[in-house]
Structure formats: C-alpha cells, structure tokens
Length: 201
Length: 152
Image (cartoon, rainbow over all chains, first blue to last red; front, side):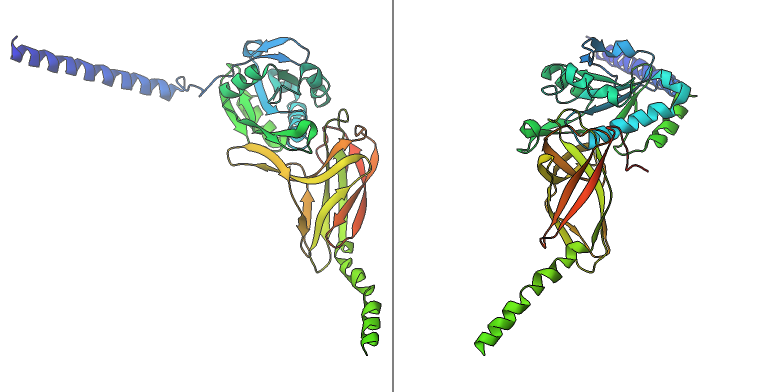
C-alpha cells in the first residue's frame, strides 16, 4: 500500500466533498431567497369522525385554509367563547369565507360523541365541523398537532372532571401546512384582518 | 353597674351586623349575562361586573341559585404556552373603589347540576353571598350560546 497514494486520494476526496457542500449551500441559499424552500414546521394530519358520523381526514380539506380549535363541549367558558369568535371570523370574511374551513377537534372523546357534537357545533356556525374519534385517534391527533390536553378531576364538574387544553386558534394553509396560531382571546376582527392578508383577498 | 354594662352591650349588638353589612351593600352588580346551554348536564356560565363603591373590601364567598345544585366562581387561566384550564377561584375580594369583572377567559360563575338547560331568553336569579353575610340577588338574562358579551 503506497501511503502517498492513500494520502493524495484522501485529500482529493475531501476536496470533492468540500466542493459538493459548497455547491449545496449555494443552491439552498438561492432556494431560500426565492421563498420556495419555506417548509411548514408540520402538516395537519388526522383520521377522525365528524359530527355527522362521517370519517374525515386532512385530505378532505385539501385546498382550504383551516381554522383549527381544540376543546370540549362541557367547557363553559373558553370553548364557547372561542367558537363564538370563530363564528365572528367566518361572518367577517365575507366572500373569502368559502376558502376557509373551521374545525373543532374534541379533546374529550368520552363525552363528546358525534351525536353530542352534532347538537353543539352547528349552533355556533353552520360551516363549523366537529371532529371526534376513539381516545387513541384523539391522542394521535393531539400529538400530530403538537397540542396538550389533560383530564382534571373536579368532583363538582359534570362527570367529575374537566379538561385543560391548548386553546390557541390554529391556521393551516391550503397545502395542509401549519401557518400561524392566535392566542386565546384574540378578537375576531384582528383574526379576520390577519387571515385576509394571508389569503390574499 | 355590671347589669348596665350588659344591657348597653346587648343594645349595641344589633347595631354591629348592620354596619358590617354595609360592605356588601356598597357593591353594585352590573351587566349580568349567561350563555345558553345544551342539555342540563353541561355547566352554565354567568358573567357580570362587581363594583365596590364603598370604602372597605367586600369579599364574595359563595353563590346560590334555585336553578342549579351548585354554583361557584371559577377562574380560567391560560399559560404562556397557551394551555387553558379552570379551577374554583375561592373567595373573591372586591377592594374599595374596585371593579371585579367576571368575563370570558377569566372569572366566571359556573352553575353545575342545572335543573333545566339554560334557554336563550330565560331569566333567572343568582344570589351573590358576601363574607359579611350580605346577599345580593341578581337577575341574569340568558343569551345565545355564541354570545360574546352582555346584550347591548
């Protein structure tokens, strides 16, 4: 084995590797400057049942902007408040409302069956769709959306428990990718203004 | 002398609760409203404003209503990470000159074990109980489930 040959080949390989890295970096920088390499941090992903009893996944809403809220029907304060704001947003969007789909995901599948959601969700807005499933499906959905929920024992509450849960309103783009989230309590007109600027109306 | 002192003390006694009850009497309750509920199993939420025009703190220690087995003030909290939950608030003090808001996302009166669902258009009485023993009854109108604030 000729050591000098080995050394030469190693340096050559290193040189090639460095050139390759440099090329990749340059190409990537070009893409980012274009804005086309802006990858959403995650995509909406779920297999659930809607409040009419039909199976639904994110594919059913491809091409739509999604307004997503996680909650439960036995929530007397935060959830009706946010769903009322979502209704306000849908009404405030005017013609653009056709391009937006509001979704309510339950974190309480034990109590929030499709039938229960059918008697809850439409009262806020006719276009609002409620989604439920088995506890496993709900857990998987929460995981894929990176949201937190937890059961809190409270003797006086109906069923003896209430839920703690992430309460932001999420926005997903027509490609199913996460775009942004508004903190609980953001007023409807602020959301409408932000949303319209993103939809490009 | 002792008898006179006792008589004076006895005479003074009825005056004491009257002046103590002034704390709660100085509290005005404004803009009460409740959201409609679906079914009687779900808890109801009542919002209102407590305005203390007096010069001493008045503390809400309880609630009572004929239309629910239990009524309690709860507090919703949202962490910096955006996780919301609620828990019993305990006694709620209203300082002199202070207004305490029970509003969506914060304090709310939670009604549990409703005798009947709250229907839009209903009115019911909610009695606010204060530490000094004073009780303030409030007429609460029931608005729609998607109501965002007290009726204009």
